[in-house]
Length: 308
Image (cartoon, one colour):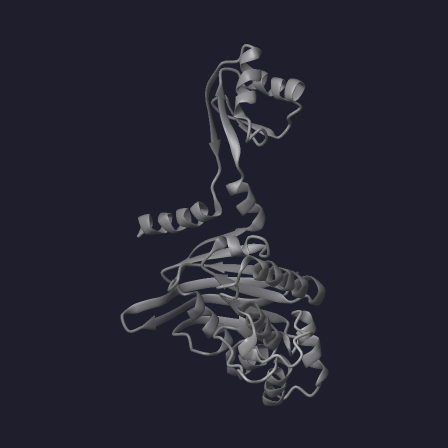
C-alpha cells in the first residue's frame, strides 16, 4: 500500500470577509509529483503556507507522513523542504556562503550538504560570483538548493518557474524530474499555468476561489486534450476498413451515430475526405477537435462558475 505523505481533509481558512480556502481535500502518495493549479488569488499559496506551518488553518484535519497534532506535524515538517516565500539571500555573498549561513542556522551538522545541494541544481561553477550578479534562473535554482539541502522526503515549491526564460524552464523541469526519480522525493508544485506543469506532474488539482474544482491524472489530461479529426459518414464500419486497408491508419475509434475519431492525418484532412469519397462513402462533416491545455483549465473553472 502506498504511503500517504500529505493528507488535507476539509481545510478552510477565512480572512475577514474572504474565504481563502473552503473545505479543501488534497492527498499525496509517496513518490508523486502533484501539480497544484489556479489563478492568482485562488488559494494555492494559502494552502501551502498552512502545510508548511507559516499560518494556521481555521478548520479541517492535516497530516504529514501519517502524523497529526502539534508534535506530529513538527516531526513531519522536519522532513519537508519548501520554497513558499522567496528565500532571503545576502546579495554580496556567494551561493556557497549563503547556504553555509542557513546550514548553521538550521543546525545541519554535515558541511558536505552544501556542495551536494549546489551540485543537484547545477550551481557548482559559480565560484566567487555574488548573489546579486545571478540571473533569475540561478536565483531560483539556489532557492531549490536551500530547500533540498537537508535532503527532504517532501518538497513544496510555490510558483517556482515564474519569470524564467525558456532555457531556465527546461533546466528547472530536469531538476524536478531528477529529484523525484533519483532521490525519491515527493513533490508538490503550484502554478497558475497548466502548461508549465504538464511535463513534470503525474497528477493535478485545479483550485478556484478556495475550492478544489477538479483533480485528474496526466493520462486523463492527455486523453481529454488529444487532438483528432471528427468525421461523420454514412457507414462508419466501411470507413474504418478504408482507413486500415488503403491509408494504413489504425489510430481511430468508432462512436455512435456513424462518427469516427481519427488521431492521424491532422495536417491533411483533405486526404481522408478524398479516400473515403473514392470508396463511395459519404462524408457529412469533418472537423478538428481537441482542447488546448489553456481551454481545459478554463473549462474546469467555467463549470465551477456555472454551478455557483
